[in-house]
Image 1 (cartoon, rainbow, N blue to C red):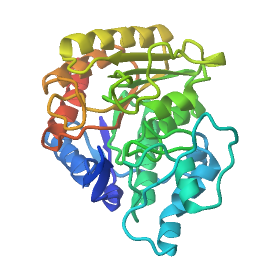
Image 2 (cartoon, helix red, strand yellow):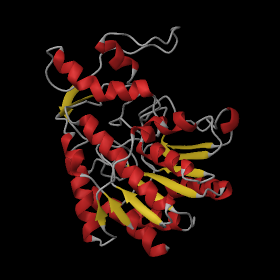
Image 3 (cartoon, rainbow, N blue to C red):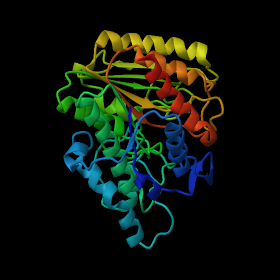
Length: 344
């Protein structure tokens, strides 16, 4: 299994984020990817390679051109106004109000293109996000060329980013970009299984009306868990995509027993769909020690997860998402990949 990784993520290093009414030390830090890299190297899972550079068209296949232009310029605009610190939005459009105009003001555009205040944009965010997309695309190219598996060690994560919005520490949707690449490379059908604690609202939004990409997600019940507004079981797709979206919301405190039952149901949906390739949005914030999540999986459970995914028998691209128990994140990710490789 090739591991694709770029040091460019180090340029995205927010110091603080807004959480529960106050500014706190950022949870999404460079140490996350560093610990994962050390663990997968120690596990001898395969060679570590730098990503190739892909054209902007690979991003535009998923994200709007206006949104990409905004992301690439917003930090410089923030500084040009004489503002200090990282970029944070301050106002959002209400969904019940009419109109869909993009404001001219920077603060208006920040609200238009985001959905939370917890995702700082730093001087290096665009470079890091762009590199993470290249990491995912390089992994997808491996799968398209016939590899049985690959691991895209992406940072920042991506599954909360939609066609034209960011949030949840996510700026470009790496898994969706990779899935679209696989489709364009000849895969008739692609499935994405999201096992992060938080629902992949961006991925769902991108593919909700399409039949060529199945999205299945196990996550905290959005009635109580971030990002709150998507992820319910009755969201099954729309139009051509009806039946191609499968959400499995689970209550706080869910441990392996209940979680693995949902995993089985999701895997059955994927097997029935019979995709030519599988993308896994790999979040390990389902771990019992995660500081901002509420499931109870243990480190050995991730070996079982990897083994179950291997039984699907599909070329599989793992794309790194969340996981904020930094001391254990490397072990948990390596266990998924080791479980997958040992069971193939």
